Image (cartoon, rainbow, N blue to C red; front, top):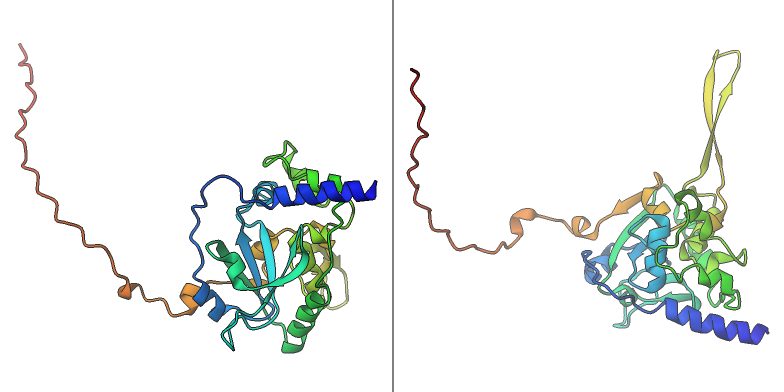
Length: 271
């Protein structure tokens, strides 16, 4: 039975990762500028176009459906494209890919702030140690949740629906793997904040915020975008944007329209 379920899961996984019908109107990222701007430890958010991406964007109410972690410099050193990004794929599992994987897609860079070089390396090493891990495709329930592009579930249940199934959604939802990487060094993404009122001798009433770690299975790609601890980096601006250098299309002068005389309305005379 496990072999049959795994075969069905593999077929279902391949179906979900096929590009969905429709047109992606978002602005694609320039790969050259993207490679020049990315650093190890950066999170790359991607607006995917597959069937599963459509469902994830609906469930998370966000533009972003996929996330990958930069683990080494993406700039080619010997002419070959470096496998600089670690991502979790439904069919292939945790893998290292190059930036060409996201060619023509809308992307966003989210950069953690305040981390040391050693901490960034530990985050990258955590991701590299998980290369080759596979998603258990025999969990049909874990995959079937994405068959409907817009599943009819209440809004406050949508995030938890992403963690439904086998209890190990890391291989299916890429953002949970990256959340584990940052939790390994206790770097916050969107922690649960508890406000505590303290009474002491020096301050009559002081307030302290205590952070609680949110379980990694509940993280989605948009959390890195809205997190107050990640900086949004735009390669176009980082490369030195100058709007004066833009080449605008020259429009042909429009002929002036002659003013048509109008007759003022007649005002009836008072008797």
